[in-house]
Image (cartoon, rainbow, N blue to C red):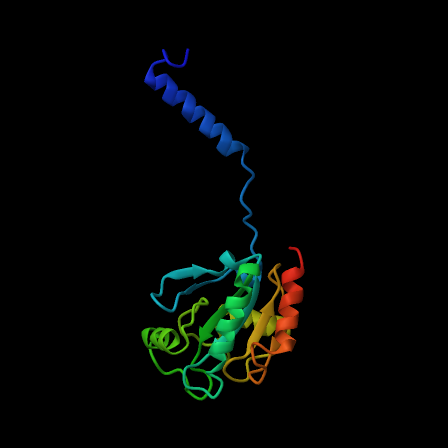
Length: 192
């Protein structure tokens, strides 16, 4: 019977069946934590990136600088990211020139430094303010929720899978320290 059916009818039946499948599919989750409801330009090409894409992941947010005594923490951040990314961790880097003018370069300069010196693969965003009177919107919310402002470069905020801040860590706390990794492992084990 189908073999003798005109092609336009076959196409119409196919289209109707496909429409039914699409309608039967569950709706995609559109909920995003207010903390993550921000868009920032990507460091490498300044393409806009909505942080909602990281909803459901454990997130370590860190303000970075290329010419700081803590710059070697890029290595630990990358190790952390490589070790846990398949389990749901993402590290988000936000270069800032807020402390000691230790990030004076352009976004391209910063991207080249991160790639060539530390082979950074975790997401990095364009240079922005993270403290003072006008921090970027994410850091403004992080500061409000924790009551703590970054005191220097490589200050870290840990966010759970539901998009809530659970802790913050000073620049002296290495990203691979047990205080951070034990909390990350605990959060990775929790359900959304």
